[in-house]
Amino acid sequence: MMEEDDVKNQVKEPFTEYGRYSYADYLSWQFGEMVELIKGKVFRQAAAPKRVHQEIFGRIFSKIYFFLENRPCKVYGAPFDVRLPVKSKKNEDIDTVVQPDICVVCDPSKLDELGCVGAPDLIVEILSPGNNRKELQNKYEVYEEAGVKEYWIIHPSECTLIIYSLVSGKYQGSRFFTFGDRVQSAAVPGFELDLDEVFANLQ
Image 1 (cartoon, rainbow, N blue to C red):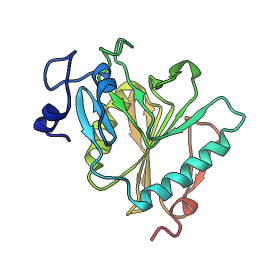
Image 2 (image 1 turned 135 degrees about the vertical axis):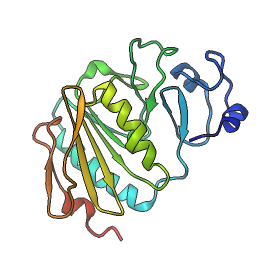
Image 3 (image 1 turned 90 degrees about the vertical axis):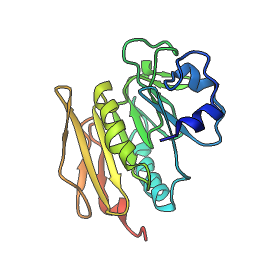
């Protein structure tokens, strides 16, 4: 997480009390790297994604993209802003803006020129060194609260995938999937992923 001194030196905040930011602030920033806003706090990427991360991303994104051709759902890859409003959709009131590695949005009313406003149906996050806590704790919480139907977390070095499915407002986790498994998405009916193809020849 960005230290407060870093924020103070780089961010001017016309709208909020120091230490808590909104989407309106976010739009005014000019960072050299990708940043996310989670419950008003600024998070940034420690470094560019590793090669293995990008290989996994490409394999999964392409599978989803071709599956969704001629279907109403749309798939987007980072950088792509997903705003998760709690009560109001005003820029000054939204305090969570994330950039999932991959997200699928099936409700076109949630899409605008700047990205997505509201919970995507499916989010896929690929862990990178230094961002595990953000994905496993901070994002888990906001995705659950926002109503993201399905949240996939992939651990590249362990070649595992866990699926969190929203049931009565709370996430229920699957077992760990790995080589030899084919996983299906309940949020995107009919989509199936062969993990042998995802994790093959990554070294």
